[in-house]
Image: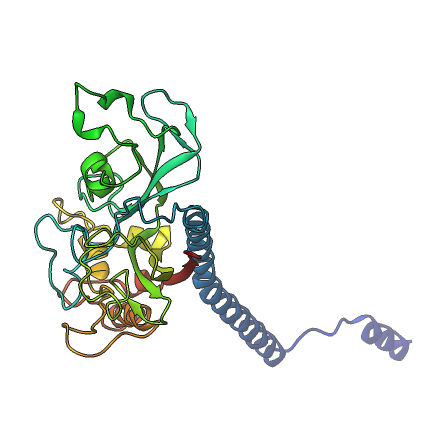
Length: 352
C-alpha cells in the first residue's frame, strides 16, 4: 500500500523550470528585444532621410514642371524685351555668392527672370483673365517678409490688344506703343518684375522649400554661358537689344538650377537668438552656392562645363554636413544639410 501511494504521488507531481533554464530564457528574450530594437532604429534611420527626399523631390518636380509650361509658351521674338541675365541692364545677378562674401547693397542674391508668355494671367485693374502674361520668378530676399528665401512667381495678365489704356496721351505719351514690344522695356514699365525683396501682390509663393535659384544658357554652338548670345559671332553685342536686336536667337535652352530643403530641416535653421535675421544660417548656405559664371572661380580659367555649378552646390552642402559650419563660420546642423537637394533642368526654347 505504501509503495503504491508513493508512486501515485510521484506521478501527480508537476516538474518546474530550474533557475538555469529561467536565466537562459530571459537572456534569449533580452537578445531578441535588442535585435528588434536595432532593426526598428535602422529602419527609422533609413526612412527619415527618405521622407525628406520625397518632400524635396515633390517640390522640385512641381516647380520645374511649372517652369516648363511658362518657358514652353514664351514669346520668342526679337522685338520684345526680356529681363534676363546679361552684362548690361540686369541688376539681379547674384555676384555676391561664394567664398563667404556677403551680397553688395541692393543686389539680389538668387537670379531673377521675367519674360512674356502665352499662359493665362489676370489683368490687375479688372481681375479678368488674359491669355498673355508677364511671367517672373524670384527668391524673395527681404528678411522681414513672410516669403523670405522662398521662390515666388509672377503671372501678370496683359491686355491682348497690346494697349495700356491708363497710359494713353496726354497723360503719358511715353507709353503709346503696344505694351509688349520694344522699345518699351520690362524694367521701365513693370518694376515688380525686377524687384528682389519688396512684398508685392503680383507675386505668389510657388516654392516654399526653394531657397536658391540660378540659371544659365546652353547656346546653339554647344557652350554653356551666362551671356545669352554667341560672343564669337557677335563680339560687339552689349545686350540682346543693342546694337542689333537679336532676342534669344543664339540660345538653344535655358538651364535652371534650384536648391530645395524639406520643411523639417528648414525649421532646424531658424535661430531666434538673432532676431534681426533669424534665417541667417539658411542664407549662409545659399551664399556658399556659387553663381554660374562663364569663367570658374574668381574669374580665372576657361569655360564652364555642364554640371559644374551643380557639383559645387552639392560640395557646399556636403561640407556643411561634415563640418557643421558654413564658409562664413555660421553653425549649421548636419541634420539640416541632409535635407537639402539640388535639381536642374534644361528648357529647350526651340528658337527661330
